[in-house]
Length: 116
Image (cartoon, rainbow, N blue to C red; front, side, top):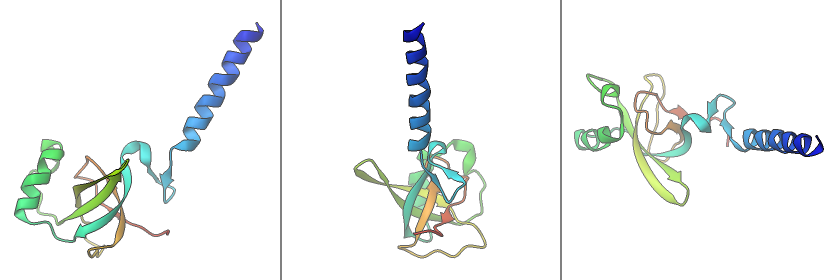
């Protein structure tokens, strides 16, 4: 009985530790859902950028989208990566601005960082 209780206690501790290790940015953008810290590389994506980054998005995310997009740099372990991100109509961004971006989901608008 004691080994079973010990195993249950260790399992519960592991679950709690894993939950605490996953950050939630700005209290509502969970890392586990693909949100990452990023920096705007270019505030307006060109047609060439759009064609290149469209490969990384699901096919239905960008079809017929008249919206504006930005190129955002983010870190994946020790490598820099870039993605295309939807720009909200009411948010102005410039190259170098710090943002949150939901990588691999081009239909979700980026969020400008509020906290440092």
